[in-house]
Length: 242
Image (cartoon, rainbow, N blue to C red; front, side, top):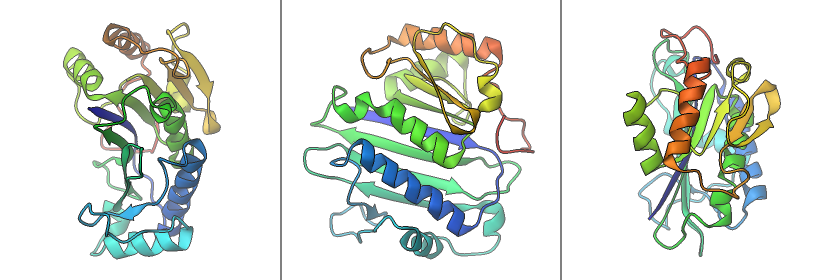
């Protein structure tokens, strides 16, 4: 069964609802350019049924949706949480979620995209291009660190290095913000792609042409951790990125 996650985290960064909506709209537009059949026809996160309301991924529609889904006091501190999903014929099921705009000193902001399917497998074009999806998330959300992983890869890295859920790590691809990228060692077994804002994607799949073994991913994590590129952001947070 296909289960591939692309995600990213960052520390405190206050944002308006409109700014969050602009980032999300830009993300969804860029995803559609990568794989239109998969990343299209977005549903609001209601009951997970095809009859759920559809959402046009425009800035005004996303502003209204985010505001409707987030009520209560102190939203400028706790942030805004919202999600969408898509399930198109012949494509993997996609869910994408954000938690953004938080200025909490202890709760990270995040963006994630999950691809699931019983019919589509990891040979699909959208999975081959998952490191590009990571680049899109990184550039639109200015994340601190992010990764692409399957469940077995995630479990193996977590157990080997005794990591918490929010700890930076390398999967089949990893994103490093500018501060982290400056510490990244050369010569890891993948392609190095520079991104906006000085970040770096290290793609162990080499553009989807290889399937890195778990041992390769473990070794990449070890080298990145030794170099300091996967250190945690200091908590309480005093900035958004490393």
